[in-house]
Length: 133
Image (cartoon, rainbow, N blue to C red; front, side, top):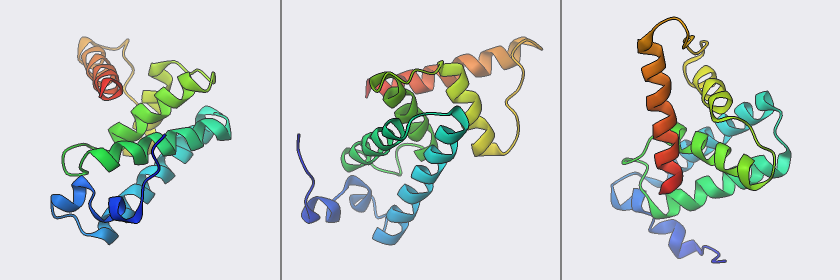
């Protein structure tokens, strides 16, 4: 396992895309707080939440904040960590909880119309694609 040094922290891909250090730390802190709120709502174990935060930070040591939505990545990290830590939650549960905390409203009911079903399919595809990265 590779540990990151201070030099790595100074030369992240986000820095190369002209995101200053304070803004990067603020974005990371918001995303981790988002993961903690979602995790508490989903009743995930603390080890799962900590693993998700580590996956999130590791991802953004290799990718830029300008290229990926921090909340989508945070949601994917939560789902991935719940699978790794044997604290499994259905993908739809994780997505609905993340939607609630991201937009501060309940996710649309997929049984009402095909548009909502398409939205849910797109969200699941996004999360699965993020896990493959």
